[in-house]
Length: 161
Image (cartoon, helix red, strand yellow):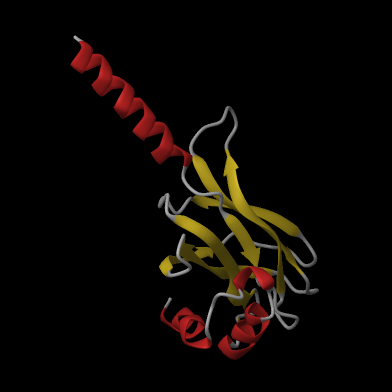
């Protein structure tokens, strides 16, 4: 009986340590020439504390409606090495100068320490497409203290997303 009780205590301690995970730092990389500005990026819980989701709030900075946008989120682990990345696309109409909240399933790894997000592409209602200049993304992100651990070589992996 003592062994079973000890096993339960060990499992409970391990489970709470695993569930605790790392405190994530969410970093927004906005480029001056991007038609979209990300206002908020972080984890959110749905009503009633349901499943965590990645919440991004963005604003259309232009006087033109946008019919699609792509956002890249890149995740770095506790040792500042790339853990993974996601490219999410929204096809919800974003009217001129309007802000909107987008929700996606969260990147589930407990080992993520730093998460960054930036707008990679936008399609206007008239069919014109804007794409982020990777060099500008690297330059902007490189000036952010939260991302100072990244070398340019690591940042170039953004292009593979």
